[in-house]
Image 1 (cartoon, rainbow, N blue to C red):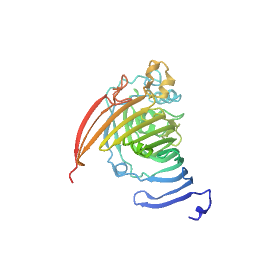
Image 2 (image 1 turned 90 degrees about the horizontal axis):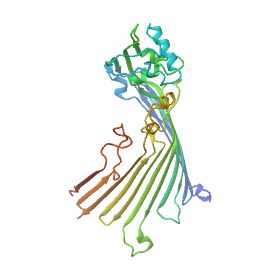
Image 3 (image 1 turned 60 degrees about the horizontal axis):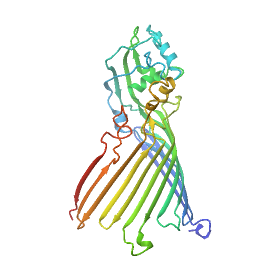
Image 4 (image 1 turned 180 degrees about the vertical axis):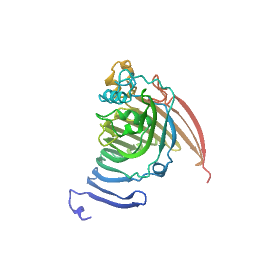
Length: 375
């Protein structure tokens, strides 16, 4: 209200929050938030937020009993794999194998076909994870186009002390990842003389960090033709377009590990778009939806760098996803609703050699149903 007398401040809001925690297992921690919203005009608004969030380790991460487990492992030091990792893998494997009296890297062949024994469990010494979030955005709602809203937001999230439950394969791979053998090598046991894998240990630890950033674009438009011409009683229409540009999705498994940017990996496409169009006329509703993301990698970047001819060029990536869905419903007597639709109208299928990339194996499928509301 104080700033309302200034023409530059149509509306200015400051949002502050603070919270203190004490966990009897992990000690004290705190969260906070500083946010603001500045409406410059009726149709233009700026917004931004800085925040700290925490997540305490759950019961399973803390107290899962350490028990026997088994895993089928691909040996990174095998002569088929030793050149498919980082530039340090060959030297690390060679040193580790020769120290056991086994054949060196490039010669060693892991003939073991059985699962390897290990131990897996929780860690009562875990600490809370912490995440710092920054966002900034702009919202445009032009008065000359009623019902239209356009927002563009930037986000950056950094998660530290992330609780990581390493897979047995990751523990094995990361042992030979860096210029010098790391703690992971202490969790792996090889047989003297042969170098074959004998034992591994898996525990949750506060070692990982993540960072992600990108842009979200949202466009919404709703209109009723009767607002233009009262005789045009054709129902109401609503459109929504949501797009994301993923700039960064970096995972650092340990403090001194090389960053692993996973943008473009399965589950993390660089670009994603969804579009929905709805028409409601009385008791009738029709919706069309489109879901798209661009192509993603089928194999790791390390694998491609080590051997560009590993597969034909067309097989390095999964194809883009583009599915179309249709849904309709009609309500009778304010109690009965019949609905039906078609998902994946174009019958897009998984890529050759995949069960669920970039779509599920269901293909095109139809559905019908009914709902009864009991008053």
